[in-house]
Image 1 (cartoon, rainbow, N blue to C red):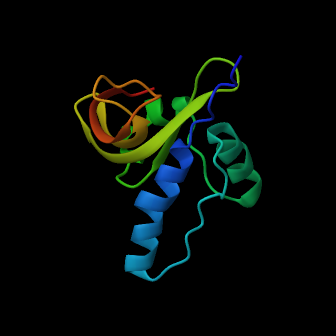
Image 2 (image 1 turned 90 degrees about the vertical axis):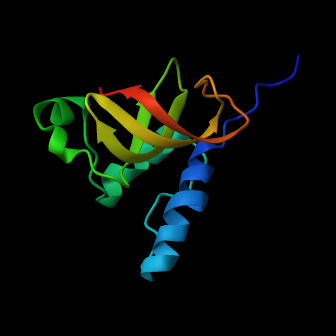
Length: 119
């Protein structure tokens, strides 16, 4: 039996989005260097990187800003992440790697999603 491939979605976030922005703005890229979504989340707090919890966002939607990295915990130790592009009504507009046209998290490319419901 073959081992399940490990998603590399955090690499998409770091390399495609944040790294390019950091170079453009001539600032240091402070995104955690890991390919694991939940490892990224877990390491961010102790490094002083602010994390927003679903309850925080439910109380104040204005906390959702373009450029934020979102993290979703799925079943077991699986997760998914992407970059927030904006907010329209009650839906996030996101850029997500390792997804597909139908929105699956094991995908074929980087896509804009316009139907991700807020937490």
